[in-house]
Length: 197
Image 1 (cartoon, rainbow, N blue to C red):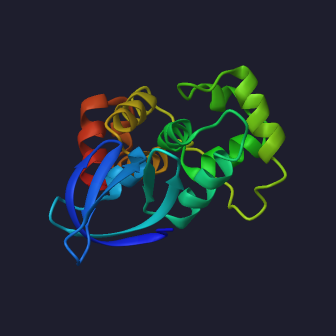
Image 2: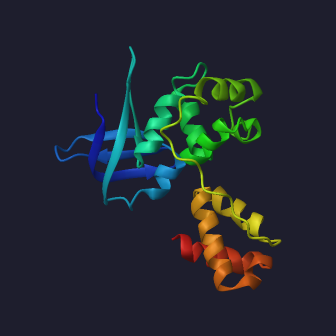
């Protein structure tokens, strides 16, 4: 089984990357959006945790920058009705910390916001995983900054592929420097982009 890859990033796009190892072999990986956003530019060095799935007709590799994301992926695919594609979609919509918090809190609403996760599957995720996640950290508290532009900017940043936690931190830093930005979408968006990049 392949558990880790280190090499040169040959290609990347949301959901997919190719890593070439020292032997000149390129491995195609399925990746989540958070892993995609953390990858270096094409040609850069990359090191990823790998989950290898072997089936009769194919071998599929799933790459993760963070070990906790890989561990949660492996727990998710152990749930009845959750395959690798849905697990990647779930991890693309929620950070591992937020997914764990939603499952522990039995927050079906957060889980059903993920495409492909309906009410019954959200209930099954909670039922099968709530007592199996003690070794995961909880999510940090959500942003408490108020302002008409804050939620719109957070939504725009997450739609661009940035993680919610990173977006919230960028907004907090930006508003801490200039409180007037909380009511100015354009200004806050530009300031948050400078911080997050």
